[in-house]
Structures are given as structure tokens and as C-alpha cells.
Image 1 (cartoon, rainbow, N blue to C red):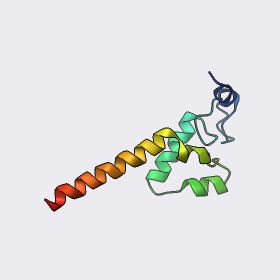
Image 2: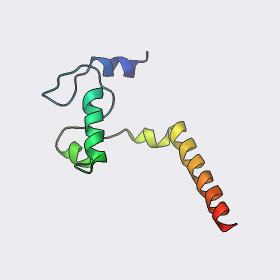
Image 3: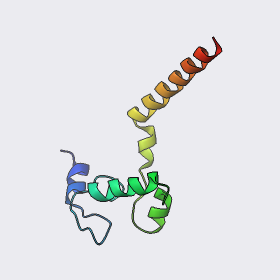
Amino acid sequence: MNAKTKTRANQTCLVKQCAAVGIVSRGLCQKCYYAARYLIREGKTSWEELQKLGLARATHAKLAESPLAVAFTKAKATAQVAQARKRTK
């Protein structure tokens, strides 16, 4: 367990009515994070709006540069090119 994980495990959720201990992402516990994702998916709010309301934190900029994000972007572009080639045949 690294230092960042230990710190998150001891923090409480940003949602004052929740008070759960153990942060998953954006300052939220697992239950509140999934509830926020559901509201966003349903078109009722956005991460930006939740941040303005103090109900979520911004993502880390390094996330976009992570090896997984880079590999995903490359794989998606490759798949799109392959799909476009199939359509032209």
C-alpha cells in the first residue's frame, strides 16, 4: 500500500451527509462516486457542476498522461482506422 492509498483510506467523503471513510475518486466514497456517475450518465449534472457545488474534486492532470490512457487512446485510434478501412472495401 503506497502513501497515497493510505491517505485516501483515512479521508472522509466530501458529501457532509455521508461521512463514509475511504475515498475512491474525486473526494468521494464508493457509494457517492457511483451515485454521481449515475446522475451524470442520466444527464442531470456534470462533474464540473458537482465541483462548483463542492460535491466533487477535479481529476488529477496526470491521469490523462497515464500509460493506460495513452494505450487506450492509441488502441481506439487504431480500431477506428481499421473500421474505416472495412467500410471503404
